Every structure is written in C-alpha cells, then in structure tokens.
Length: 505
Image 1 (cartoon, rainbow, N blue to C red):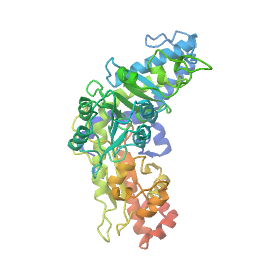
Image 2: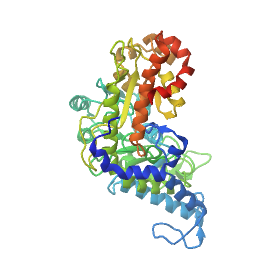
Image 3: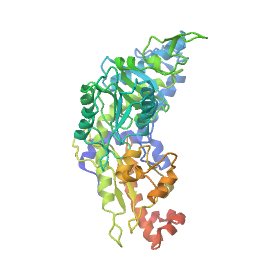
Image 4: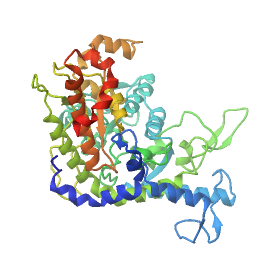
C-alpha cells in the first residue's frame, strides 16, 4: 500500500506518543476514528491526575502542595484549607485556559459542563429584544441553532447564512448578510453573530476575520470552537471575539463534563443570568425579591458547585496538548489526503461506479512543515454505494465497522444544516412541519439520513488510515463475495461478512 507523503515523517513524535500514552488502542485492537465525537485521553494525564488526588507531592510553586501533605480538595464555597486548595486549582485552570488561547487580560473564564452549556449560557442571558437579530450559519451544531429559541421568544429576528454544497459559508455573502442586517441601535437592540469555527460534519473552517467584521458593524460575537480547538491554534489576541465556547474532552479526552466560556469581561457584564443558584449570589432575600449577585463576574454564571476535583486535569491537559498541537495539522492533513485518494480509487468492477462518495470538504492546502495551519479540519464524511449507486444504509456500515473494531460515527452529527447541504436535501428540509419525526423525514426522502463520519485526532497514525482503507475494501469485496444479488439480502445476511477479512489481506 502506498505510504503517506514524505512530510508525514516530520510528525514522528506523535508515533512515539501513541506507543507510550495510548497503549490500550494496540492492546484492544481498536481503531478509533471518532475524535470529533470525543478525543481519547492520554494515559499519562490520568496517572498525573490520580497521583495528585491520592499521593504525596514535593513543594511546587505552581500548586499549593506541601512536602509530605496529600492534596485534600473541598467545596469551593468555604474558607477551609481544602476549599482554598480547590479555589487555587480553579484559578490555575482559568489561567491555563487564558494562556492556551492567548487571551488578553480583558477576558475571563466561566466553567460550564461543555461547549453546549457555554453556548446556552450566552443564549439565555443575552439581552435579545424586538429589534435584535441573531445571525448564524446553517452549517452549525444544534447548540448554536438552539440559541434561536431564546431569540425568538423575545421577538428577535433569525437570519441564516446558507451553507455551500460542500459545507461552510461564503465570506463575501456572509459579510453582505451581516451588513444588511446590522444593528441600527446596538445599545437598544443588541444583535448577536454566532460563527462556527469548524464544522463537525462538512470539515469546513470559517474565516475568523468575519468576527472582526461583524464587531465593526456593532454585533456581539460568539465563536463555537468545540470542533476547532482540538487541532488548531486559536489566538484571542488575533481574533478578539466577545465569547468562545469549548469542551475539554474534545481537546484531550479527560475530563468529561467540563467546558468553558472564554469571555470578555465587558460582554459578560451585559449578560443577565435568568435565575440564581448556590454560588452565583451574595445575598438573597427570603421571602422577598432582593438578590445581590456574587461580586466575581464568572461566579455569577457558574451554577452551583464547579467540578473542582477535575479542574487540575484541565491545567495538565492543556499543557499536554500544547506540546503536540503544532504537529497535528501536518499529520492529520497528510492522513486525510492519503485516505481520500485511496478511497476515491475504489470502483465496483461491474459498473465502474465509486464504492464511496466523499461529501465533505477536502483540504486544498498542502502543508509541508510543522506549525502550519490547515484550511480544513480532519474529517471525512462519506456514504457507501452499491454497484447500482444505491446508498448502503449507514447503520449497517457502523455495525460492520464495530465488528472489525473500528470506532466511527454515522448519522447527522447534530448538524442538520450541514448534512442537508452535503446530501443535497435542502429543498426537502423546507417541507418539514411541526411534530415531524426523523422516521417521517426518512420516509419522505426515501432513504436513511446522515453520513458515515471518520475523524482523526491526537493519537491517529498511518495504521488507523490503513484500517479505514482496508475496511472500505472489505465492504467492496464483501459485496462481490456474498452478493451478486439484491442489496436487501446482503443486508439481512450480514453475519457472512465477518469471515471475509481474509479476502482483504
């Protein structure tokens, strides 16, 4: 099999990482290509965090550890020693997040459950009004679309930027839409522009310069960086967005249940949390209506007790990722080009039709050195086709992949606008009605909705790429070894494909 481009060798340090920090992949034989769903945690991060929680440590200026003293962490809403240690770890994690994203002093960090929680925080707290407009891309995650519920409830307009056939948005059209819908009285009717940094299904990246343009027109801005941050450098010095949402499990696998809103303090002051809870307030009149919010801006939006036991792992995880992040764009685009070129060469013998159809955006920029940034993500969204050109059900592909220990994902990936664009069913989407179910929609379009998504990440290597290509070849060989008959019979007799692995070796 043809090896990837020579530039791949420049990323050898990631192969060393795979041998030391992701040994369980080899021991289980699992090929993990669902990094957009969640990164795999490095084993050293777990050891470091566990050691911090239970072991004795030497004095370290960056921690409150003392020689011979085990870390005891307590609820942050106290003044005890354990509480002070938890607060110190939380402050250290905030500082690490700000440093990682090169955020100036005007930013702070609000810890949330995930990127969705960060986006919801902005949506429910933003001062939408009857004169406001919420502008967003059709190629966005449902968490971004969901903000429209808060906007419409307050009488605001929703304005969508259409998705291009292979995903993403056209910068010139986007600027035109922003200009035509710009806020006339930004203080009386504040408007919000939400930009998806990278699509989780179409593999498209958005030009972050659109944020500066929208700001110049008077919009408040928010960046969904959940898919962008794991493999791309994001600098808030260069991209001064009002707020940015991230999930740490997507970046380095652990901890889950912790995300962040990295936000300008002035923008945070404009938000109004629609309720209060423990930790968000200083004084509450009961019975009565008087509420005095916490004097700390980020605490006003951190509902209840933050996940203080896992915040030290955020600090360690960011330090870990920063060491390898410069190598990822080169490695992943090289793997992406290799897999795409191999898959597109697969043809059915009888008809000459493709075995797969790649629908997501393909990188146009060839990276040649460590540190360069890619013009797309590291995703391949595709569908498998029979010799007659019919789409092989994605649920079958996912089941077949699991039998061969390949972790991938199928479906619409919570991005209905992106999947509608690459499947060319935007007109069908317009026919939806209140109460429609997915089953209704699939019956209407006449096939199963969604795509097969392969996504590479921190621990991906050539062997993973080879396994994906081998699996696609196996699907092709399986069709001819088992089939020569209607697809439905093959679909109902899947167990026969389990013995076809020898045909691909």
